[in-house]
Length: 163
Image 1 (cartoon, helix red, strand yellow):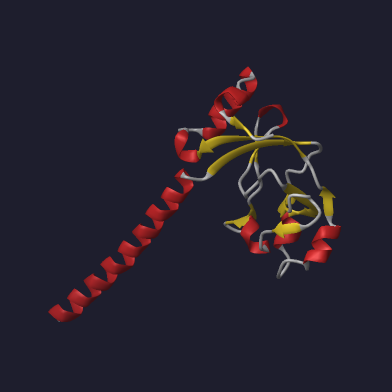
Image 2 (image 1 turned 90 degrees about the vertical axis):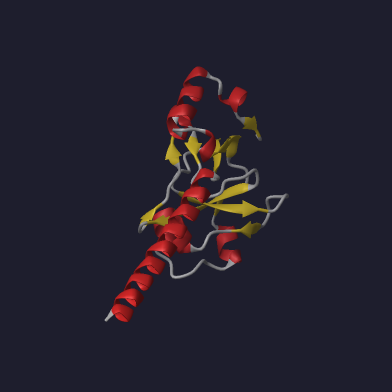
């Protein structure tokens, strides 16, 4: 009986210990998530971002459909003040957007072939501005603080301007 109880206790603590480790890793990853703030020529907040080659002619990276979901819902960028967005997926200088929405893309069983995706590009150079505001761990409340910077016209003073 003592051996059974000890094994159960050991199994329970191993289970909870690994769950705790995952939670700590998730928290560490969240603190190091880049804070990329951007604006676009047209509203593309619900369109799928893809990485383009330097000449912007070819898609070189793209998400898998399920990568765009968080808890079963599309993980859209966060709306900020003055038409800006806080990225939640991986925006960079060579980002383009597909004609498909997050919801349409996430419903696919797999990503479309590259030739199809390249035919779906809306604009090969959609970004008006892109700023790197550090990592999420560098600000207690990134959305509130970035909105304050935007309202004061100080975003480019606090964040590194990439475009």
